[in-house]
Image (cartoon, rainbow, N blue to C red; front, top):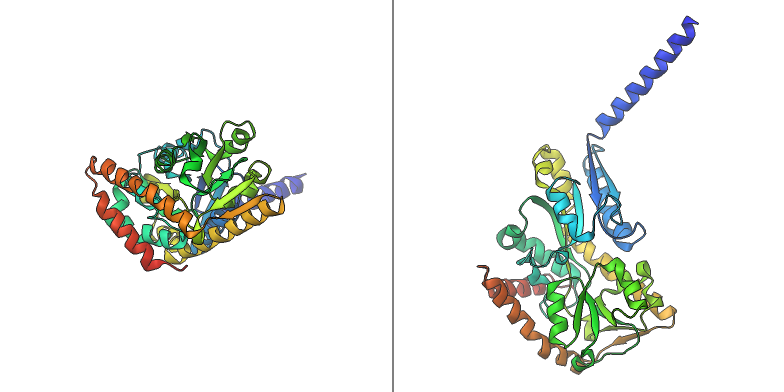
Length: 346
């Protein structure tokens, strides 16, 4: 009897010792919350590799738990407040889900400021952050900013090749800069998080969307959109910016070597790779749409020039808007264009 009690005590002690060792091995556990599905390219190709890189850099002292599809509660526009309030440790989100909250960062989203190279835009954001963009982000520590491959055009049943073809059409867009693009084209912008798009298209709530092709597989948009359209040379109608950010108090509590593990996983090499990843997922999305019998359209140079002429006033509108907040929008546009050209790879 005494032997059984001794064996039980030793077993409990062993479990306690193992648990303590595990806790020491992973001193820092983080909850990362986002709005896309667990099988989306964003999670599998972006969030998971980044998280694993941080963990490896930390020597096993960090574990990042990813919670997709708003599984910790709330709606996508609430993510920024969740991380600021410390409800979660990390978020990945669309800046435009809270319109006007990140005005300086919007410069990268503007049509014909962003053209077709997500890696170059990511590096431009990185280079501009400390000097130009940081005031947009109180209450968080930004790990990195990035863009997607740009706003392509997906249409339920209409092929659009000219600005006039958008007249009176209802189009989904997540950002206010994208809404201004649609207004300039004569369309009616409809704001909604991207997971709501398939149902909205199937019910005719919207006629189409400005969205990257990479989302086609995750949302099964090949079932809803007959036409998948982009401008010449893969040019897009602007883009969307995203942030990966940590609660500021949590960041400030971390020892320097753990902070460095995050920084080393979030630098220029990663941002360039992220651009390549998003470009690759674009090609996969187009291939899936074409395989489903849908039409992929690339506009001509002349057709693209017509869009540029109509959309240049969107840039002027943005400059006027942020100037009213004391931001030198014209200088940001000039700098963003210069840095995108500097880092361009296409």
